[in-house]
Length: 388
Length: 92
Image (cartoon, rainbow over all chains, first blue to last red; front, side, top):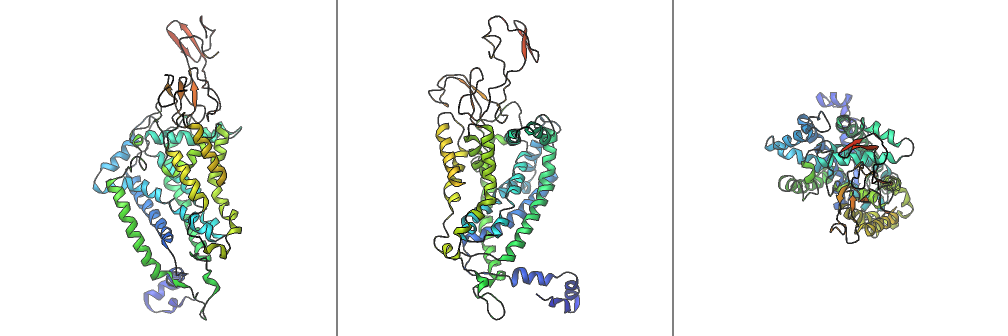
């Protein structure tokens, strides 16, 4: 795409000779052709971008109020989070908005399972999934920072999983914690990783993801490859420019999403203990594990897998396989994703989403009780094995 | 032998699975754990179950029994943790 703006007089030409703003705008938006038949699921692409920005903005303000506790028994971090909730009408929405929008970032993921994995893109989806582990690590470390009692015990459990590694496990656990138990050193390093290292990694991966997406182009519900039929000017016959058509569509999606989001943030911030658990409003207490314990809703499938194995090592390995399975999912179904196979039934969620994830999520939300333990274990094993 | 005295049990109260603190459910047939529950400890995190001596039940995620630390009784009423001693009279 020629940089015609560089030859224009005045400021616009001066700017474009140094920074190809207009070329970028045209290649990525106004002359970036997308299939004309995007449906509901494509809202989630722009919504993921929106919640990423919300994460950054709310995170900046939260970090202004955050104070890392001095000792593992200190309630300073917990009270600084509580203060940021009560410090004014604006802050009231920032504290719940941050974790809520983090929950919506992984919500971008099902769209790929539901749609793109089954529909087609063999190479892009691999790239599209690469931000998952980063998002999980970021969410986990952010969950620890309020230093509530659930934060403390989540950190204890998750870090102790590394202790299942033979030989180096116990030493590795101490190295991650920076102490003999979850302590001040752990909290400080999690703060650093959560606000600097992992966000940078996430932004890099999101940028790579967009580059990859715009290189191969989006798929569409009917599995039609729009790049195969172009007119004399090289414009796809079945495509329309992303701007203004899909920017307008996405603005509508954003408005609907923000309305729902505002209802949750302002009226039901804890969402019946599902988004913000009651136990996490109590300061961290190394002498009392909350009962029952429950992880964030988006971790519950992995939690169900972990506890369903009557062995520490097997549970940890199964959970690791479940997390890393997303890397191999696109390849494993590639042979089924020919264009002809994509048209019929392509709007149905793929197997892992339709069956296994909701079931594991439900099981993960149930308390670990002895009476139904075996039933849950066998059910979780069956679902996880049949999926992966 | 899990305890030096029949009336005192000394355990490290940290689950050997992933480090949470098991809760006491001493009553047999506890409503939470069912009619077959013989009494003992249950970990709230992943449901590991231990008997009244801290021995892990088969099928629990925890790989080993709750640990017994080195301990001894200086006299009838004084427990010393960290120092092993000879079994006291009436060991179980």
